[in-house]
Length: 146
Image (cartoon, rainbow, N blue to C red; front, side):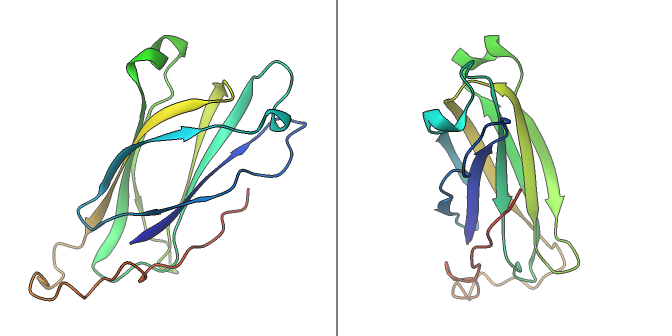
């Protein structure tokens, strides 16, 4: 499964959004660290940008009803304030998910732990014998504009 993960700075003098990071996520889920690092000219001189983390999909397969997203700072960042976010996000009427998480008052670079787990429909047929049911290119990327 492919998701589009991107970040943008929300400073008054911010330039273009950051380059999106396409990430391949297996059906079992995704758990890794991601470094959000705007270019220097995207933030004001006080380096006090708000970052928006966007997770977008196109239409999800029928047996995936949503995504569980958990984002937490690493231990060294906890002193700078809580920037963790966790929630379950379900498909809209078009079968898509668009998650926008605001990380307030961040410095220009943050290393975050991000965990994304697909939520499957418990009533969907068991397709364990058909591993080709969901291929990596089933989900195309959808640009997320802020």
